[in-house]
Length: 304
Length: 304
Image 1 (spheres, rainbow over the protein chains, first blue to last red):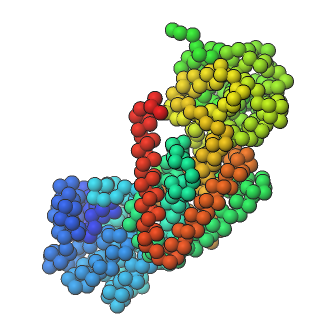
Image 2 (image 1 turned 90 degrees about the vertical axis):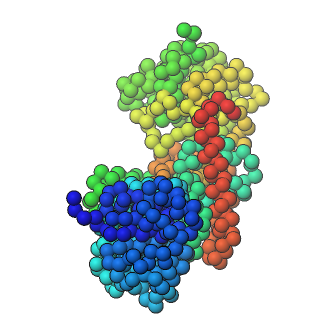
Image 3 (image 1 turned 120 degrees about the vertical axis):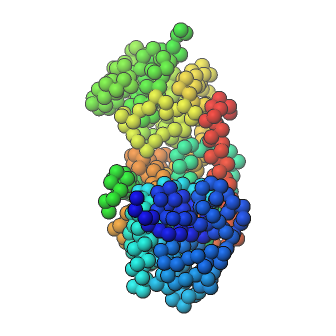
């Protein structure tokens, strides 16, 4: 057997995203040891009991002296908490350690890094696994979460290629495909394809729960409504952070959506059959194509 | 074995909704014979080949003389085509035959019946099975589609109780729960829980496909987006009809939603954490409760 890809894998924040990567790497023998960092001692104990990490601590400082080249720190805390982890890293961690993160917004992490370190350090590779679930917490960890999923890295010209390479191979080890793009493109694309749908789902459920004057409204909803609103069951704190961190891109895509919806509203009001059939047919075609693309990707995961 | 519940079951329009009921009744021995009516001879041939109906014709007129008390005609054509079926019924069908429909909007069917017959005839029981799929057509017919699903009937004071009873027992025979409410409440509730989500899903996919200037936008979307937009793959003609038929209720719920979304937009723009956490937490709570309710219903389907 060849040597494991990573020496120590340290996950800061042992929830769905971090716990799934730790468990996935461990199960595939891709790290010598997995170490968890969580604020609460109960989370640390749970993570060890569930076999997600080999040992766990409440502070990064406690293992700082053990870490060097070939070790990876994965920051998997809510977007707006990343900067406090950077403060700890600045104080305690060797510049040879590879550091990466999984936050859903990259511009705000870049700003936090610049604020703490002066500039984004060469050892820090910003990244985002496009995977998730409406479930959250340490018990939701799933070692196969990243199989056939994409991970977007947003390296800078100043990022050290050795660290980018190690992070890339780490994600590939758990079955993900790794892509690269700029911070700006990442935040715009995710603003439209992920953050906007979450805003809409939360707002729709809130409209029905609060604005419509019918206490039985949910009683008559069916399975289609359940699927459509699944993402409204996502963690409110995580999504609050994303709304603040990616504000401009989200507002931009919300405005495009509200414009489109208002045109559709006029089409419905005026009984404009051509317009309605046009929008519905075009949307069906785009969505059917998207589904085919996802199916092809799962059938041949290595194809780009 | 007891005698079948129905004598002849005639389905006009052999798509997902009509075909699934025909096949479900046949498989459960709940009708002596299932007969299909479709515009195209190919659909008729397919429906017989797939075992959905025993025989099929392109016009209701061809079997009009065979039908009497104990027979049921189920109208399962797109909402705005119901009135042409009423014209045929008026000309050829005995007043003893039970007639019902499955259109997603009930106010427009009521108006069509009043226009054709002068008043809604006592033999006509308006109904709507709250079940469906983004798939459509005769090949999508599923004999178990209605199990654990709800069917809403909207009888009038002038509707004959014998016919309401037969339609109720027909739906129960394929595993559905039957509820009763007014035409107005039905159209308002469905406008909010089904028609509004479809409008939103179509509009979101159209925004991404057309308004956002990034040809790769769908490449980076993930599984959450697929679930959220599943209903945008629904049949455009069917949904065009629904938008026209339930216009006022849909506009009303769209306006409530656009108001709610605009408030959320302001909250995001102003970085109002309290407001965002409030909306997201309330929505998550309502959606989690709704999911629990659906799960309980499937575990104990006979409970109301």
